[in-house]
Length: 427
Image: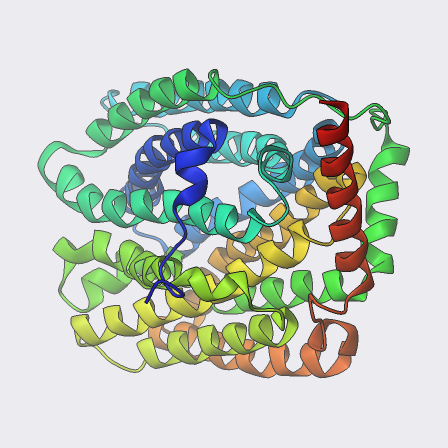
């Protein structure tokens, strides 16, 4: 069983990773509450599929702009400073949500503005956070470290939404927003204890040219493009989160709204807890493609039933499939991309797994409005299966990726090994 259980040793030996883990557990718990409270509040104010789905639409543009620029910043300034400053900014947005919820007539427009603000700070901080990890752990520890970073998010995300339903039902959305504010304060306190992660001597200049340099590098790597395209397809066509508040009402289970959000995370955490196999696994291209198809299958099946626990079971299986894809994507990215490009490519990675869900919210809401909730869910899952299969067939470099033989992976192993040996000699 030791081969399959998640490797916790980096938390014991690396204090920086430990502080990042604790910070993430706390802040993600608060964010998970807001993740449920914000669309719930919009639904209560409008009772509209499209109004809830539009939350994803207003987040797309600021996320794209800030993720691309955030990638440039991650390669040119201290990554730790970037992350904690963005956390502080997110705290202010949560305070705006709390203040708005205290009004006798909360402002709908402000909810959309804050949603866009959260997307902006996520876009700015995400590349710096992702690019920190390879600098704080050894090359061999990267798969375990990335699994732990997934676990920190999943632990909070599975508890947060489940509790959010209870908290919102008993105390309203203002309680959820208040807890989120407190979580950001604690998160920043732990982030400040992480060692600085300054840019390398050959730091990238903060310029549009540098941003396009990262795009050109990504375009030259068909294996990377495959990971982006497949995940975009899966999330855009088969992400039903915008429908959850309506789905819970439709099957007369409003009390279980939080479980809709946490079911997928439950499946994810089971995969992460048994992710020891990742240490020796190398065929990441095929694994990502099969996992994305599995996601589509499970989402489509979830839409075929009105039985609450069967729906939740399929959502959990979808989350498990998605987590296999996420672990393989993170390993492929972090063990093949040079640190010179790590921040800018992390910005593209953030877009690949964020723009899809945001656009997917609008797609799901629009399809449900013009047809039905069930049609929206099932058709999204079927489109995911077909388009992922087509993309995988057209991208052999992605499909046949193997960590043992990929030239970029070999170069990074040699470079990081040489850097480690050089540091040992100088000491």
